[in-house]
Length: 305
Image (cartoon, rainbow, N blue to C red):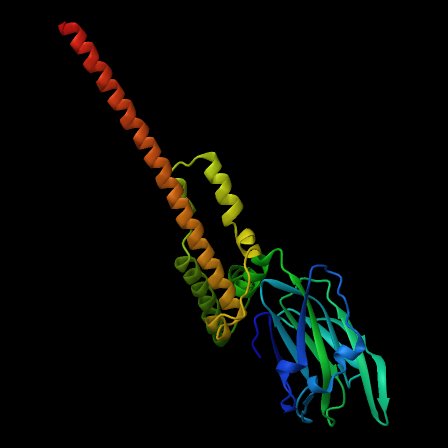
């Protein structure tokens, strides 16, 4: 499922219900989540039934958050007593939660979970620890979000969050006694990693050097720093759900497009300011030259007389 704020998917196939109706989002101004009443979550219209097999692992809900937002809590009502929570795109284990029993009907037990998220993450996985022979029923899920005040770090993590340094790996393995097959494999992998890293550098030249060649007034430089920095630009962005292009775009693509558009606008303003400064300097020089010529003409006339 793709929305403006998040993506949600499940590892078990859907039997009945709609993923779009099952999960809703709530944007808050405070990092402390305001948990909704039980009746807002226990809704049959939001019910989603998933079914797995003995071969499959436990069902997982996988959430990916748009860079402009951060998750602070997840509230859900589900027929499952235990949930394991994993953070990030590396699926790092965080904690195990035991739900609060809110409803019982014969052998059916319904539990509520209010999972708080104190760490800034862009991805979240919830693993439902339940019997694989029984379908999994989720009644309602509420995702609590806040505005991301530092989206640059999130963007860099999503776009280039590789933690492996190929040079460090090569240094560690240079004294190792590897077989011919292992050596060929090492060369292939490290060569691919270094090539990809070099392509990123080649395709993303740094424009700061060319910009610094032309002196600018201190006021212009300060305005450029305040208005065109990445956190400042992202802080002013809004993801517009009514846009036709946004309906077919991922949250990452929308955020990058808005950032590029804002960067072009800032660049146009900077060029206009530079041209205005050059024009004023040129006009001042011409005025000075005309004044000198006029003064020289008056002196020549006075000498002739």
